Image (cartoon, rainbow, N blue to C red; front, side):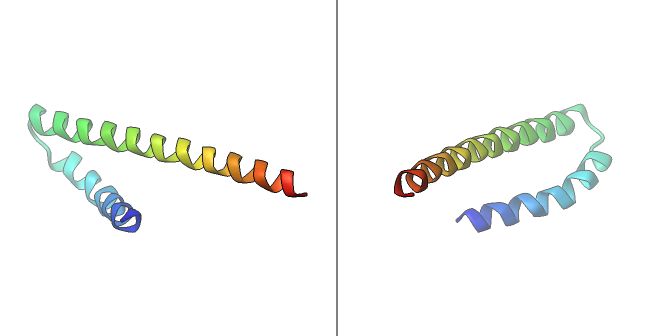
Length: 65
């Protein structure tokens, strides 16, 4: 599931530049902006949860040493 999401993100990275250049209406550009803000929020959440997991694992490792 995560791999599918990342592949989707990667493909949208490749096409987002084309979309921005080809978007001629304000509405299209606002939609693209909203999508990018959503992507940023999702990635920030993913990074936060990953950092928490790293911290938990680090604490477990320290306790076992």
